[in-house]
Amino acid sequence: GNQPPITNTSADSNNGGEPKIDQRTFPEHLMDIIEEETRDGYGILEWAAGGESFVIRDKLKLETEVLPRYFNAKCKYMSFFRKLYRWGFRQL
Image (cartoon, rainbow, N blue to C red):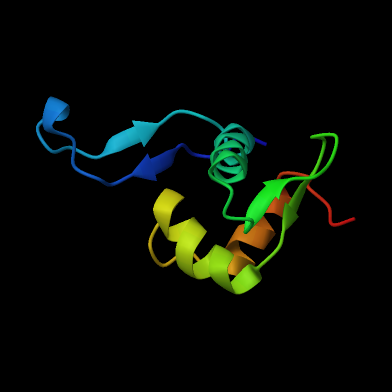
């Protein structure tokens, strides 16, 4: 189903400090996050071999370091996990 846009509440000098609205769907946003995290080499969240799935290597660091960079600072692992399931992602 259609999800509401993800809101980035960081102030932007180009729009007078108004929150920026991210028009990407959750899966599009997730792909960008995985791409950035894989490229940066932290090993917390990364593409699996073949690039058709991803691996969460450290749940605690995902919740305390990765999720706050991309979502609400209070985003918890279980909330993220539930959103994955709502979008049809499944654990292998």
